[in-house]
Image (cartoon, rainbow, N blue to C red; front, side):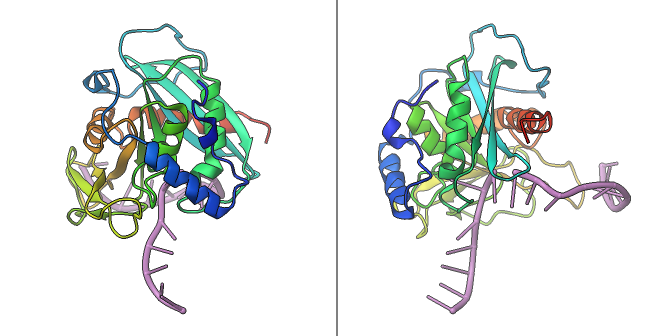
Length: 269
DNA sequence: GCGACAG
DNA sequence: ATCTTGTCGC
């Protein structure tokens, strides 16, 4: 799949002002409502999926094609390796990779300009057309409502959601308890740090996909938010349905594993 | 100046 | 993201 909006492709050589300006434009065209044809309830994982060998069944089925995206960094720290794993009906139907030089350092709020290029390159190597992208990082939970998931989703104009392990900004509607029960979710609202929308707007959720039955230790929730063409509520629903027994939703977990398997497999270090 | 920050 | 073995808990 290729970019539909080339003018929005993240360019690492832009100045900080230009990057932030581009993000405002992206947030302006992003759709934070359900605007897709597939049935979100058809995306479900009750058990873990086996990553298997590289080539897999490239046969097309019926259900929505969901693609997980994640990055790893080559040991020189100057190159990002992006991995995409496409799933349909609980099976891996395709996977793709790309390695690109890292042009800028990690800057909170500007992550897409560091990793976006590698992700778009990996997506261009995909042979199937995903109905939904599950990106590692924030979507609407972002200072200008244009996090990595939103940026990527808008550029290729495909429904996308963001899954982060930490909260970038925003305020929980109620304090996140030390221990959230599996299935629980708490809205994340925009606050003064989110400069593109009214405070109080629900921009995502803290979602508990898994929790230990008992004990002193507990698993932290995930922070999920709409990327593009998906509402905050549906985003939380989908992430909850994608938990195959692990904290991370299956698309993300598989892309995660595929990325560092490919990394240590020896992508020219 | 202080605080705060995805991967 | 990444550096990294053992270890605490069920």
